Length: 214
Ligand code: SIN
Ligand code: FE2
Image (cartoon, rainbow, N blue to C red; front, side):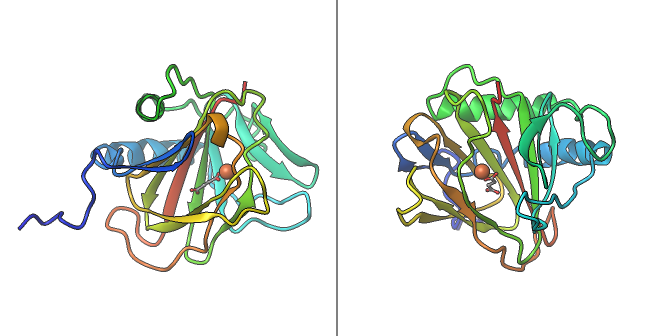
């Protein structure tokens, strides 16, 4: 009996919608390397809980790497060249992260993906992200490439209409979701993280989302 019988093969893909696909275990082998790269980024640009324009504090802790980083504060959402916490440019995007993002995009049918931003989200038990569209990026021809590390979660993925009820997908360590083209403006979100213990990450989940902000 294979110890890993319960895991889908690395090549398994679940179509989510036209333009959106879940690549099961796409980054499973390289997850340790990616995690080391993320930790070095977070050393320079620590995770923090941002304020929403509506005055709430987000339950997800965030940071960024690459030329541009997503920030939220009472003024609004935007991409910025410097980390407001340190006043320094965001850390460079590590080559292993850029490479993973490019390969995943290509696998999903999006050639020549050149992300200039990677948003790093950390969820601890109870943290969640309500349904939203990723629409702060000027260049919406490029897809979003989203990597999950650590504890499993339930990812919600709908359509570009908020009225449509989203589908639910379980995402585990090493899974990658890519959405672009007709799915680029689909509403999506993350259900409250269930408690657990992950061998590499402990009681948390990290999500890396690669974007072309333009
Ligand atoms: C996001 O929508 O920015 C993050 C999605 C996720 O954590 O899976
Ligand atoms: Fe998003």
